[in-house]
Image (cartoon, rainbow, N blue to C red; front, top):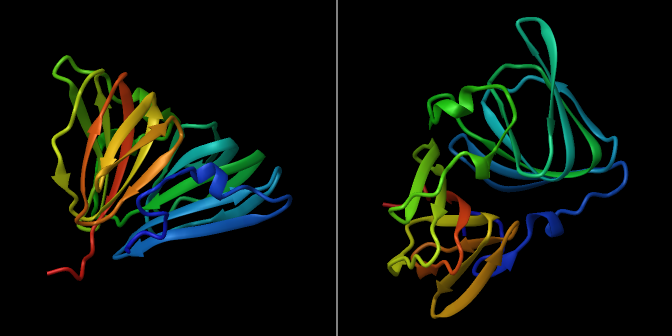
Length: 227
């Protein structure tokens, strides 16, 4: 396993990383070649002191409210994240994180030379499920981060679509942003509802079916030591 999550079963990042009062809990699930995935749990009014980081990252709010304060051109600014909200932190920018109420969020870090979508270079808060429209062709896709070890992309899938059974390359966390998704995984069917995730293991046969349209985020990682 490359990612430290629950393989082959439906799970909830929010439920598995519940905040505790006055506590900061970090759950690092992937860290390789400058790419990382970590879940943070912050009790209400808990904060991470201002720091500068040598790599860029994006932050996805899972539950609660997260306040981010940062400096841009010597001006102090603030962004507020609610569930589904995303904030991009460039490298070498002073940032402070504070939970306004019990908060769980995911940090995805990547190196300076990673390819990432122009939208991720903007400072304002945006929402993943609003970035991609449904297409009459059935499935639309947008790539947000693409690197040697990690890719983040979004899919919008129309009602009634069925995906061809394929063998996974690398490991992929599928998270439902809107609607629900049927996954046929290694001969059994699982249903993911909004806010739930599923880790597809490397080399496992799988396909999907959508009875009603849905939007999903896919976070794939690859073993750099594989031949």
